[in-house]
Length: 101
Image 1: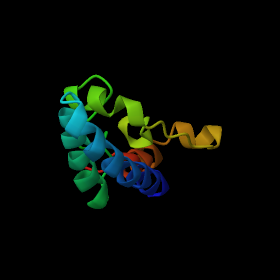
Image 2: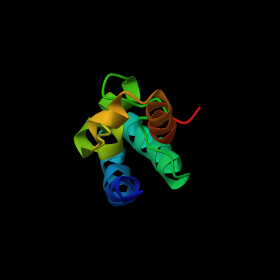
Image 3: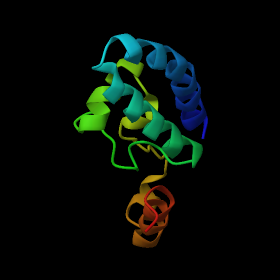
């Protein structure tokens, strides 16, 4: 949630600047459209990565100049006891927490 809010703040700050720039530089029109799409996704509470926008996608490349955090994949790390590592029920429970179906 904090990362989404940080990206949303960056996007909201960039929209007026990109609106002004897009009047003079036509290549900024596509960037502005991508930023507005990203804003809608972030306002819905979803990360850009989970919405399919990554650094390798067309929109991701357009959003690169903003260095948004939720475009990047997430790495989840759990500090667990060795005994829990062999417990399949525990591992399935942890998978469900980070990758709900």
